[in-house]
Image (cartoon, rainbow, N blue to C red; front, top):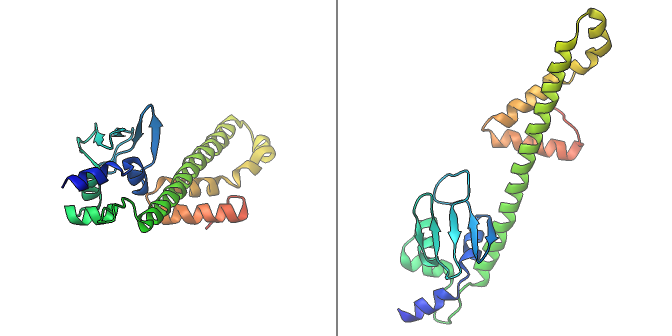
Length: 188
């Protein structure tokens, strides 16, 4: 058992947590991120230099083996295998490193998509508010004839805003891909 204790001390818990898709930021000697065990708005999940973790939101805590068991829902033996603790005293196998790299890449893509989602929502909200503000300032038919061109894209703005406000990530991703391909707002 002492051999396992020694081996798990060689595991970089912050790297294992990031490999699970949790974005961690370094603060002093510890890493902080959003807890993977519950939904939260502000980071409360800490990984300390002694390779222990604690969530101050839900109370989960432990070491690298505990994290893997809880995150993957596996038993102790399987957690050891996932961490690559074996007789050759390896702690992270090349396969685990590859998985960690894939998870980091996927987490970065998701983060970029979510950032785009927020930025696009803000942009569309501003366009919609400005359009309605201008419309409220019109006092005559002449004003409408002079500035009516700004009304044409309004249904598109509202359509895309509805997509972004929905929980349909597939529709949002279609919008994201179309905009990336065409460089402008176009119906999906």
